[in-house]
Amino acid sequence: MNLGAGHKTGQVLLSLLAGLLIWEIAGWQFNTAFFAPLLGSDTGFSNSIAQWIAGIAGKTISEPHPGTLPKLWSLLDPAAIGAAWTSARAEGGSILTALSAAANASDLLRALASSLALFLTGLAFALTAGLALGMGMARLPWLRVALEDYILGLYATPMAALIPFILAIFGFEFWPKVLVVFLFALFPVLYNTLEGARSLKPEYLEVARAFRTGERRLWTDVIIPYTLPYAMTGLRQGVARALVGMVAAEILLNPTGIGDLLIGSERAFDMAGVLASILVVTLLGTVLMALVRLIETRFITWGAALR
Amino acid sequence: MSTATAPTAAGPSLGARIAASPFWLKLLAGLVLFGLWEFSVRLFAAPFVVRPSGTIAALPAALSDPALWAASWSTLSSVFVGLAASLVFGVVIGVAMGRSPAMNRVSEIWVNSFYTMPMVAVLPVLTMWFGYSEGARFAIIVFAALFSIILNVADGVRNVPREYLEVARSFRAGPRDIWFGISLFASLPYLIAGIRLAIGRALVGAVLAEIYASIPGVGFYILSNARALEQNTAMCAVLILAAFGIGMDAIMRWILRTWFPWYRREGRQ
Image (tube, rainbow over all chains, first blue to last red; front, side, top):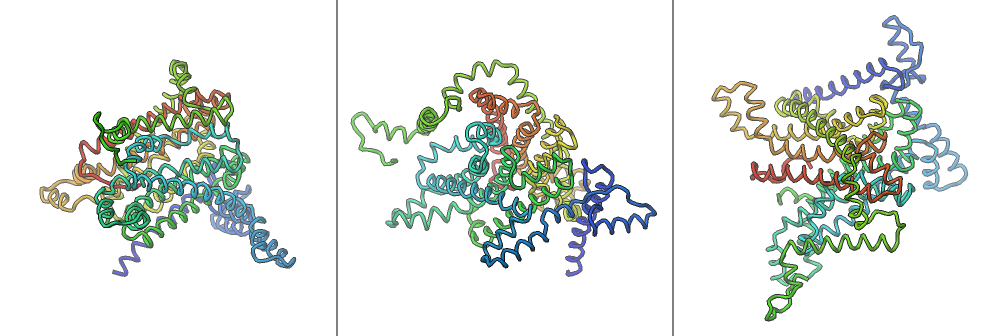
């Protein structure tokens, strides 16, 4: 049994390793503007490994091949982080100011903080509006009947098409970008909460009313527990779409955050930088999705029983 | 609001009748929504900002403009072909992942990573590979659509009832029948859920690619008109996109309702 499990994990790891190896080999075949290897040969450590491997094959590496991971490391710039931290602490700054100074010293952390601020603000607004309206529609069936077709229509409309309007009307600072993230995330949350509202049987509300349930208890004991599992599905979709909105806003309005890293690298024909930025965005997405799934399995445990 | 006023001799009050009839309620809600939009723009925004009356006024001219139809055709045909390609590859890979545990273990980590990767982030790579051209747009459409189809088909094939496979095997069905005759057909509702998801993602990808790389198409039509302060004309193109999205979604839901009435909320969301 244990052996079987290890065997399976082995297959996954082997596939991962094979993929990364293909990436590395493919990276060496093309010029640096077209594709970049994982490790490459531009900095000390990866260069020495690459020279050693090339030496085994009886070849020498003449032109440098910037790698994705070394690029990521240089964007993160741990030395600058450490220096900023120690100097801020030496000047007697508090832990918080030292932390912000350290984060500001690193290109990657600065971009990540800027992107996360955008993402979280937009998502928070979308979540608030989506949950309030969606649960309101569970409480007031006439409101649901009135609005559901419009919400379904907007859910199916590609919100990306509205970016030029936002750019022309509101400009390209922080809040217009928040609007983009908000629009990308709102309709999945709203649509799924609406699905919950639609499937909430009127009998539940009637029974609650027959037992003289107050308005507050009606919300805390019936409406919120019933619609929350549906809203979590919406949150999962919303997080994924908000990430797309975040990167789209950062690329198509004025470049900031991770979008700026991405665009800057592309304009410099630096494929290693582009791939490093994509890696960061993908990791961010994976972590955020895992977080949502954790909340779902940890706290919204009654969801499966409803379906 | 839903509590009706006392019926008079003329029957229930107007408010109660509107509340009881979905059609009038929806119409009223639409009027309120568009009215709010219209008047807030008139009161607070610059005259060029898009508003419903302006869009309606711009609609005849925009719809008789061959440039809009050429742009729509360019985008939507690319989305269709991209979806068809993703469907073929997605179904083959998805059935393989669903049927073979080893195949699943080998590819799941990659498929999942590419599925989680926000597709706009690969736009710079695709424009560097395919140029600022229709090729990049086609590539992003396939990238956006493929993985949701793979994952949904694999989920569906994995959830095929065991009895179907046992009966098939006892009638000496070959592997081809088991893979495509039974597994694929039993997982069709999942496939349709995947296609629904893929259509939305592909449309977003196509529009973003057009805006980013100035590829001729609906997205670029919207961008150039919005820049030229012709927002009402640009909104007509958004309406075409919305009609396409809503229409495709309606078709998929109709297929599900008609042929798979037992289907509820399966598939990945």
